[in-house]
Length: 73
Image (cartoon, rainbow, N blue to C red; front, side, top):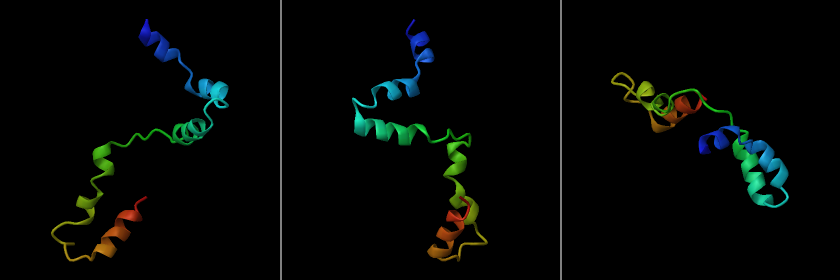
């Protein structure tokens, strides 16, 4: 019974109807709810350092490593 309620609950419709009651929370919810769901595994996202630094690239400066990781975005 409870699961059916949660599955049919329209979060966007609720915020549309109640945005005037919770102005700041509605703005936060709008910012958060528009973020697309990522299909990449978290391990893959946070393991870029191991792919940039290895035994052959261990002499890279921290600035170069940061640049390499940031340009992957």
